[in-house]
Image (cartoon, rainbow, N blue to C red):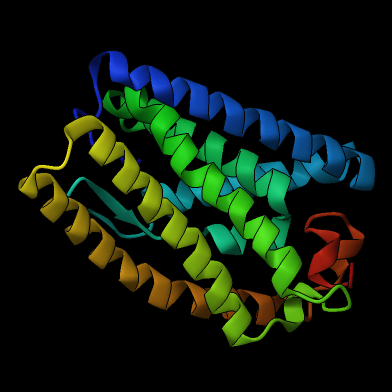
Length: 225
């Protein structure tokens, strides 16, 4: 999870239901597109894989509280590049829900805020990828500069949404601004690590083209658009 309990409470938390519903609706639209393009079996397999991966990212990889939230190695750009936008979005939402239900039920009231914080930057990442990556480039051929841009966009979006929720819930007190700054500064470590993880995973995927033929990864991983 990300937003700490109590940062937004009372009637204000209703806004998170609206933003989460909008993010969920767009994720379902992307799922419809993926269903049409690659079929139900491929979409379901990628959603399951992305959900398991996201759950492990949240619960198994190192994470620590800093300021108004927690720093996680979410690896959202990695999920996007391997599984595609719709499976990544649904996997993040389901993985987050599973973590809350199993390990942190006290965090469930923040689910709307947290899922918005994870999904909306992913949609922005998808839009950036369309502009940044040439149609004739498979994801396995991305450069470090491209991977860094994608990771920075995603993690920057996460930090931006966390800051929004904190300011919305607690205002502009110096103590709140200090905690937001501490969280944002800590996330720079994730920005430094994630592009290297992306390139390592993409490098390993170059020799696994059978995954694309089996529909277990996004077709764009090994083939141009």
